[in-house]
Length: 71
Image 1 (spheres, helix red, strand yellow):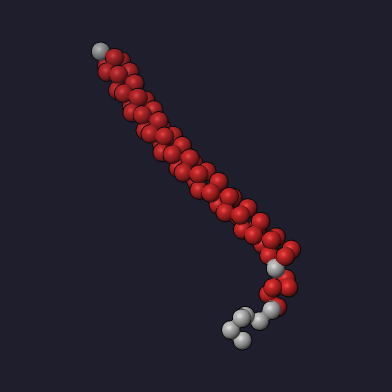
Image 2: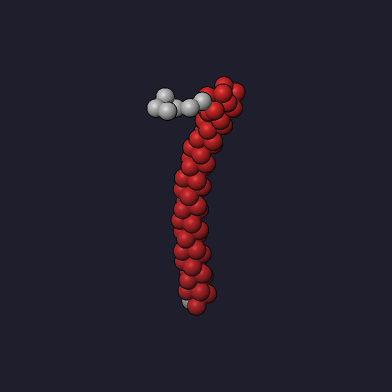
């Protein structure tokens, strides 16, 4: 009888442990998904800024030296 109680309690402990691990995995997956989305957004922004910088460097060098019209 004690073996059955012991095995039952061990089984319940293992089931609880697995349930906690499943929740932890879900939480980590959610965090990684959110971070990946943010990472992709930042990559797009960096690419956009890089393209704008190349445009400024290629064609805007002379314009930066000109005086504004209000002078």
